[in-house]
Amino acid sequence: MKKHLLLALIIGCAVGTILSEHEYKHKINDDEFSKTFMYTHPANQNLSMMQAGWHTFIYNKKTKNKTAAQFISFYEESLPNLRTGIYFLPVVCSNKVEVRGDNANDVLDRDVRSEWLRIDSDTFTGSLSLYPKQKQFGIRADIHQDLGNILNISLFEDYWINFSLPITIVENDIGFQQHDIGGKPAFDAEGPHDLFEAFNQSEWRYGRIPTKKLTAIGLSELSIRVGRAYLARDNFQLIYYSGLNIPTTTKNNPKYLFDAYAGNNSNIGFITGVNFNLQTNRDTNCFYCCVFANLESTFFIRDTQYRTVDLKHKPWSRYLLFNKKGGPPDQLIPGVNVLTLKMRVRPYTMLDFSAGWRVGSDWFEGEVAYGIWGHGDEKVRPLCHFPEIYGIAGTGELPDHTATSASKSTIKEQADNDRIPTLDCSGSSPTIVCKETFVTIDKKDLDFKSAASQSAFVHRFHMCGSFLNKCDIFDAFLSVGIYYEAPQNNAALNLIGVWAKCGATF
Image (cartoon, rainbow, N blue to C red; front, side, top):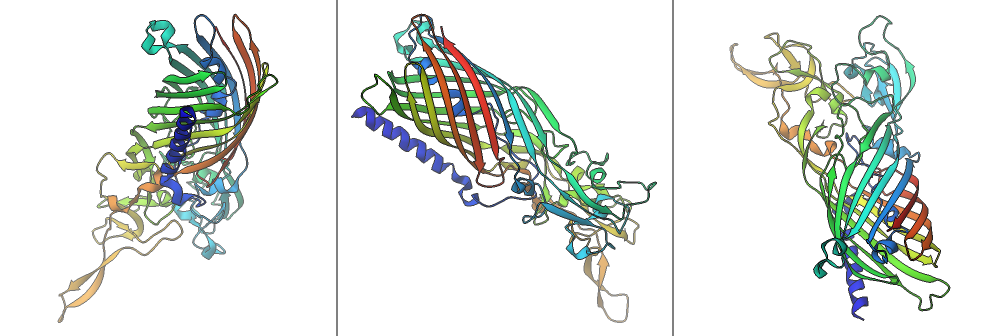
């Protein structure tokens, strides 16, 4: 009875943790747009993949050294989803962005003014779409050791330590496509001639939209877990563990949108988790049937990264042109160079949960389960003071022959130059006139949310089969599995993946 009450408590804690993670509950089913960074699920961090076939061997070991190892190969790729492209685009209702010059046909229907992109043709027409795709594949090694066998102290009899070493290859393709290009600039004109060139200008140090795949490869992290088997007998298991996730790869490169990175984007994480397995049938001569649940939560500590922001209520304003106050006219500084800042990033918590049924015998075990993966909103803040010297570029020049600003401009339109009412006392009676002035942007104008990965909530379904070999000298297993991940909003990818692994105790 006590055992069942304890298992019920674990389930309640798991459900409570999932519900408490809903910083993002108000975001579910709400698609995001005009974002500059997306956190993607590392393929090697799959709790179902790690536990399948392996769970019984590591906790019910009869071998002398009480050591176990498993080696996993995995592959996953994203499925086509129009909503994913909207995450990076300036409009929320379509995956197609219309780009027009000031004198082009249908200029009122445009989403982006081509002159902001330095396309030297006011009759330019075209459109662009994004179809982000990702592939992740690699191998992972897990080494598991009972501490009681090493330390020979009764206090540590049920404790263990586990090391995980994944090598991952990540391929990101933002799927940049351009359509219906017309009104191109003259062949010998300076500047870009189409949208591919426009979003990959050499003057842009950040925020480019690549036309090629971006790849990252390496040992994504070292994970160390220490836990205790409170119950590990036959098919009854209750396990608790905690650990540390140590990154070993580089961070996301802000030069490109949807850049490839392996692991957790170089964030250090603290891991806590519980696993339980409960046999539901009494007679196990032919087969056993179990229900199980696994929960793992990783809390990431804050980190410093470069991120690109938009201005508040102005999607894609990072692609506007800017002038510096007091500088010469027509400086036309790329907005991505001005609005990319060194940030303090707080990723907070990532959650991985799965629950389902296991049916097995002496030589085989099958598993079907439903799971959840998710994370809350990132929080970003600049590390340094933002210089209040830049304004959205206007036209012409001020009376003192310096640059103008047009602070009301958006990525769709260039507004009139900024003016302020001034009392003119030069005549016979005072009059109010509007004089051109320069309006700078400040920290309050920055939309930090645009630079943060938005919360994601993903449903996962998986099934697998494990072939078991149990003998007096060693136990071994071979497992294969398949899974599918369906996001509930567009801040995560729609994925399908497979894995195969083998392992043994010795």
